Length: 353
Image 1 (cartoon, rainbow, N blue to C red):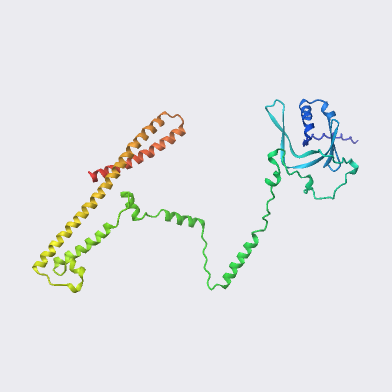
Image 2: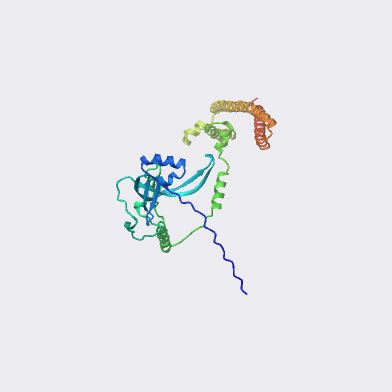
């Protein structure tokens, strides 16, 4: 015996809401808005919408008035929401079309008079059904201003790349010798780091020590001292000549007499006195620079002492461990900097005083 299989009951499809915007003439908008807000059965008698088979044209009956309508595509989608308590909103649908009522005296075409247009691709829409404005006045002509067509960049740069590769290959074929090297990004970064971590120049060290430019008069003075030492040694050996005789040239060399030796000794004494005076002036200038640096460091220490007290109070009064750790790190860095400056102050005090 064969048992009859029970027929499966087909579940009804869920209702899908389809929303659109209805744009009516101004003299009908107020009454229609009032009826929509009030609700009830009177709205069905007041408003009726009929669509033609092309799904682009239709008729809108508002009370005793009848308007020709056209369904147009909006520039972008608009979300519609509903609320029951005017506090919470739920999204109901995405609106992409608008039904526009024609205010002018346009002929009302019945269903059988609508001529079907030529078949087109589904993705292409007739221009007369494309709405170029938004739903508010600031969005006038928004389709051209904000949704402008972008140029297609497909295969635009490829021909240039191919031509460049061909040109390089032609140059390689005509070259006598070819040498190439592959550079990695890591190597380039390492080279840059090595250059940046190099030793600072001598001028920067002097600038950091004395806080200003140092003239080259000291170097010139050093050269003069070397020349003077050589001349004095020559005089002690008995084979040298005086600095003035050397400057006048070899043709003016003469034998030394007792009076000449005495005169040369006097000139040497004068030169040595001048050098001592220059050394004293340079030493005084350097001492002034060190004194200024000492005063500056002492002022910094006084300021940092106040910051240290403020940070200590902040650390003691905080309960948040993250903030407390942050302030403690700042306090440790400040103490290390103060210790370094204190050592520098002690060194400068021993030199200046």
